[in-house]
Amino acid sequence: MITLFPNTSRAGSDNGSLKLYDIQKMPTTYMAIYDTAGFVTFDDVDHSTSVHVNSTDELFLASRYSRNVALYLYDINSGRRLQVFTDMHREHINVVKFANYSPSLFASSSFDQDVKMWDLRLKPIRPCYTACFKL
Image (cartoon, rainbow, N blue to C red):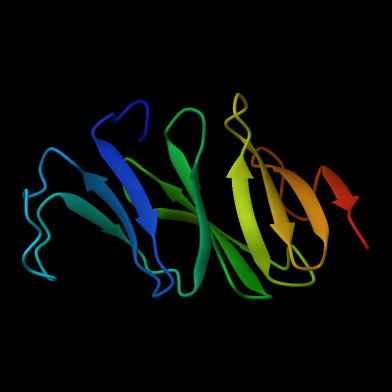
């Protein structure tokens, strides 16, 4: 659930589908696979691994199982893709999550065993902070 839009829920799937559902507009029984009532579709993100909304409910991030293009930033209100982040980690991104109280800060974790913190107010050339968890 998104706080500013309490009747909505977002979902991403491995096939690349990213949707924002309006629960009040959805039919009680979902009969047709191509029925578009009750949701907004965003650009596909193949092999998505994580979707998270920021604390102001204005933006969301979607990560994917990819080494070079791994993260997408979307505007919830317009549905537009605002930014594509590349080369953030040496391996695939597993999870991305915005900070609870800072709408421009987010963290990404990867199979390269790094957790990195990023700030959307800065150029995403390098992270603000990196923690390495080598075993």
